Length: 274
Image 1 (cartoon, one colour):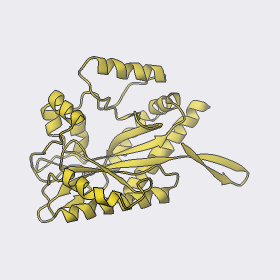
Image 2 (cartoon, one colour):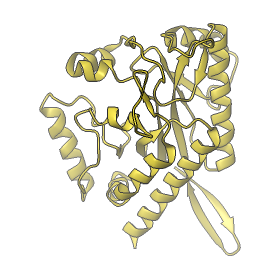
Image 3 (cartoon, one colour):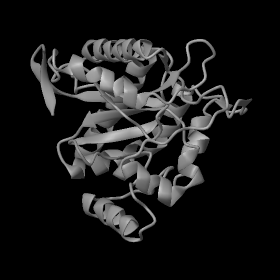
Image 4 (spheres, helix red, strand yellow):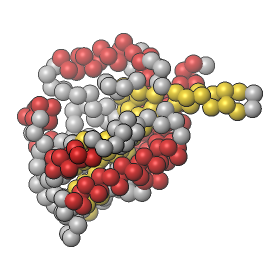
């Protein structure tokens, strides 16, 4: 999906984009992670009945109960996306306060602790298959979705932005700690994330058919549940999903990362069409 923007003598289609931000739920006194995600979603239910959910940020659980995901709607403007990111963070934190906690934008916790898994069909399967890798994966990322017109365009974009993903990691780095220790990395979330079987950079796909065949082949092995590529076609939306960034401490940095990703997608698409 895209919206038209008119300049003198020209009309351009502006790609829509949105973000999914993952946050830690923490004790406001000592900063230790708290397993309260299910409680916060229950607190959200009465509020949802009183607001227009088509414009209000959405909340979702993640792999562990110490995490909460805030999902924006698609936007065409930076200002619109920025406003919803701020609103989503404020709303999530207001619910956390009601439960005696706070929301914090850290990609890993500075403190050691044992995460508590969220129980549903998807996460139960992940925990059974990936064991310690899944149990330890208390990390918070920022996923950027950008609209594309077709799977072919999306795969062409994925093939062309591969070399730009490491700079996005560097720009968003916000996870120097792991299990209470200074890891020596600016983004230790990236190190933990790369434990997943399909994480990391991909080869050039070439065509949408080749992309979907690889996903089907990986799933058919029984080893892979989800294709956790650094960048992939969304299974739910007509978008490409860029998944390498840490959640950013400052919402303005989130907007910057999203803007850069949209620019990369647009540039790659133009190269493909040329």
